[in-house]
Image (cartoon, rainbow, N blue to C red):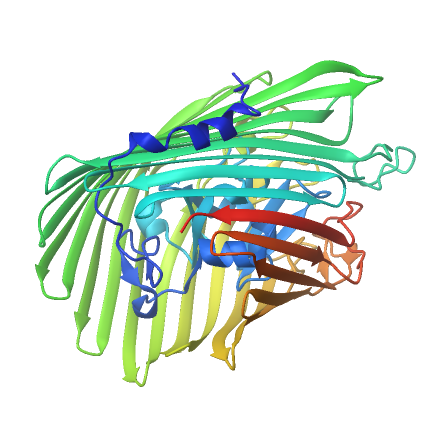
Length: 618
């Protein structure tokens, strides 16, 4: 059932401030990441490559979407099928979207049918921070974490009563509004955020019905998009040692695209993420947490012609999860974490699947230790999948502090990904005999953190076996292998009033299937090189910035016969603080109006402008 709250969500977000009487202020997380080890760890002490983007950086970037925010960052590459709201695929270190685990507030998301998370429908106005972990984490999270993990934390409560409002207008008739409040007191806290976005969009596809290219139809019209979302979070300290919290994110969208009477040309999508967590900390040496969650991914397709809307299909999937984790600090700098996860996937669709549900139970143990300049992280996990039986993964990481903020790291890990329901049971193009994909990865890195500056360099190799690929009849088989090598360089410095953040990636994603015609070809749709440069400078109440991104060429097919050119874009932004609470922001994206494609025949927006009025109580 779709929630009819196009205006209700904004009213609700502003109407509830009096409910909270909130808990203690949250731990400062600016320099801490929790996704890499399932426990809080300093970014500088992590033995695997990590990155954090907080709300201040999000606001400063003026990014219009999650893809805009993450594009060009180390190890990340995106392809998009025609602008806002269109299908967006993420490649992390050369691995595919369904080989990267995405969490929202600790809850696993993604369609059980395709295995892909709907990143395009996650509103950036609802995001507090993003944690990026590059490299396999299956030994902690199970299936899908071959390339890495991205965890999105929705906006929570700061200290006391806080309110925020943003109104945006821009190119392609973009209209956008968001508002919310939060309140935190001595024992409880609550926050609510509502957001709405609508755009006329661009012509998504240059397909031709005659040539059977691109999207196989010719619909030269604007393909609009709208999204309405509501995020509510709250918690309460039941005593000195026991606390409980809950959260809900609901994002409903309508997306127009170029399609046919068979696949539709308009879709109503809904992403719901629910969760609750109970935390018991009887002392400094022990903590226990219990968490439950659900992700509903609903997609209804329609064909619209001459103003008439005809139903085409439904793909609704549900992921229920539960986990328990105990953390034992048995000596100074020595911690053991043990736990278990349960997951159940289910598909409800107008397309008939011979099997439409399965469950998975995983147990894991992790050790973290520090011995002077040395640090060690080791983890092992066993997953018992209803369809594929037991699968064991592990990881080992080592760090050495060399002084002056300089640190060496090395890590190795294995990963796996269970085939999706589409791989196994989709009519006419599936294979129930598929086995899980398996990976082995190594990473070596060096980093240095100083006062107002840092830099990191990482080099890695991943080998994926039992890779699922399509044969000549478009049937999936475990016939492929892949070898991916790469390197990443990041750096930040605050110098003479300028904040400079630079990132560069090189990835060599190769098909290593011996005897195949595609042997040693690039894996499709992955660019080998990319980079991003962010420069910001404040002049009193005025702040200006520029973001430049560049991406090398890629091939759109496994045969490497369809080459897509590389491209670069430049975005300019300016922000003026009217007073302590109000600010005005302006952004020009792709100022040189560069034309490019990340998927063959699918357009990307040219030059765009947007203006935002923002309020945040202090």
